Image (cartoon, rainbow, N blue to C red; front, side, top):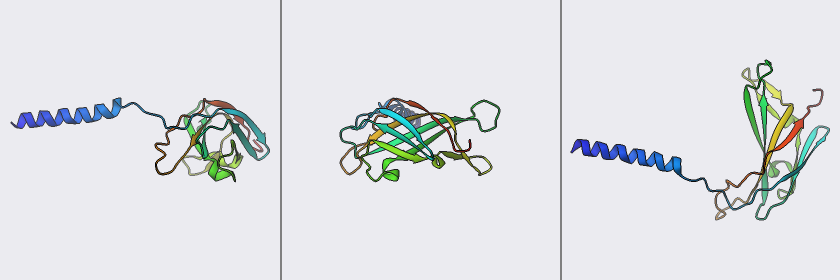
Length: 152
């Protein structure tokens, strides 16, 4: 009897983990925008994209491979997220302008390090609120850009 209970418990645990691993990730209802342009405007960089139905605001992620120990090879991936609600008066605007000083990471010594170089950006539309469903909407295709910090 004890073995039957134990086997039943083990099978139940396996099924629980297997179902969470095999569950298909479903995307939200807001379609993916497409990044159209990147511009360097002195102390700021701007991204523009296509508007999409249902989006009331947008989230832009920037990804960088960073060489933290200056050996010429990337040691870390830094992913930064920026929302139109944080930078724009109009959250539904099909673009965002971000100060270059907001592109940074904190190193192992606790120092802020500004990021320069090649990066990839992706954007997704959001429609948060009660009853609007999950917000894991599709991101745009990756858009390559180069960030050049002042004096760098």
